[in-house]
Image 1 (cartoon, rainbow, N blue to C red):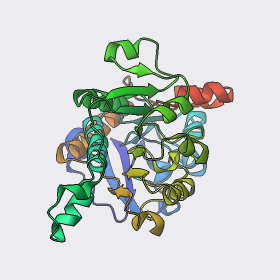
Image 2: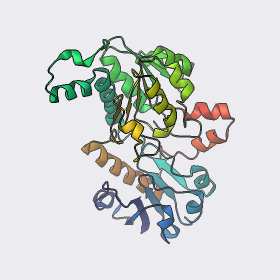
Image 3: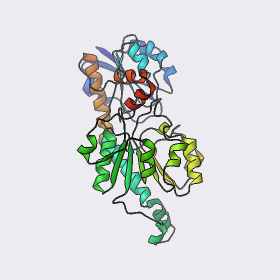
Image 4: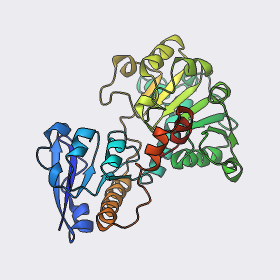
Length: 343
């Protein structure tokens, strides 16, 4: 019988027992839930695991991966896998797989929710009503949504889902993603932009849908923010560190009409006071992925992927072959290949 180690944070409430995982893997594997504050506390268990399911931000560094002598694979129950040293896993012959499609609908819905909430000044209207001011004029200037230019950075599964929803509202959708094959824009009736700065300059709303990689971290910094219109809206439901957070804070302070909807932060769960107290920002606590069904789907797909890895069956979501090759390529090629991967 295989040994499967499920790692999670001590304070997590995702896994109240392993009922779903046991339902899928119970006949061929014994499962152990290991709750730890960080990877250094996984004492003596990595050495014996045939497979590891790694939740949340518990990292698996090269040091930990070298301890995994019996391991056939690591499953990351998420789209992102930046907490796993995938190059080290590749060197050790350990496959790393993610679950890239479990919450596509929810994240896309959430991105549009943030966009609409901010664009229509819902928070301002709500505060005014609660204060006894029933007056439509409190919302200030509101542009018509139809015809608004939405720029999507990273045109993978979620980016495409956002585009479909935005087009239903009559928005004009543009995207920047050099890795997407030619012709996708024709299939989805959207506009491709070849230059990031051009997209930022020309769009009233920008939504980020890229993974966290060495090439995408802080890709939205001071220069990129300055390229955007002063009254633009920036939405981030991807990874917090793709925005240079100090640069964003400074930009918000310098441009009172600029607004942001942030589901993710660079050092979450810590929320800087400058963002917490800023009325130009809507924060949603990394909840974009969630609905009751998506959490169950994520757990089921993680367990099913684990089963295929244990049995040596083909797995379509292995990330440390193509992704590592891209990382080792020349810097420009690596940047192109990693813009949309996994999102």
